[in-house]
Picture 1: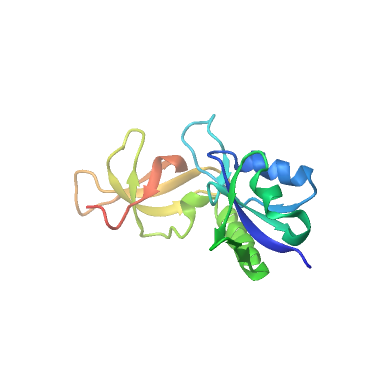
Picture 2 (picture 1 turned 30 degrees about the vertical axis):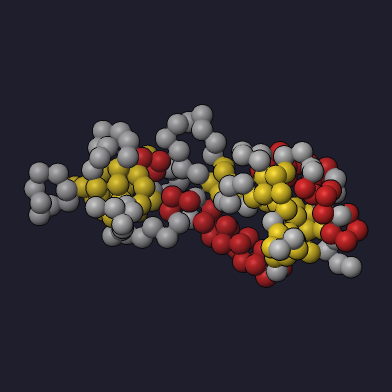
Length: 173
């Protein structure tokens, strides 16, 4: 039998640990990670794209399901009706490609964020204000937003740390 991609559900915050466990056993693994824009300089700069999950490429007939399920840091192997769910190689490649695009754009914060999008300033001097995303500033983790203050007909450009803004939830008023 040949190797196939499967999904392992990890214990909370154990993605990196389980990934290392799989690598130590010689299994091909994929832990999708993205750069995170944080306000706190001590916060993690890279985080899992799918928190609680890693992908492992193994010959399950040869190693057995229990080997994966009882590995330190693992919670369970994703299965349907007791049959381990396989993931097509094409989906793994598509995820890898998408992660490259997100990370090249500056991380998750900028994923799909275009000039003109409404953002919410969640921290700093302008916390609580809505603004219009203008651009990410090259060579830094800063962004420029357009802020309406007192004069409704004029927008003022403001440069902020990227971690201070987030896309406005369209379902939130």
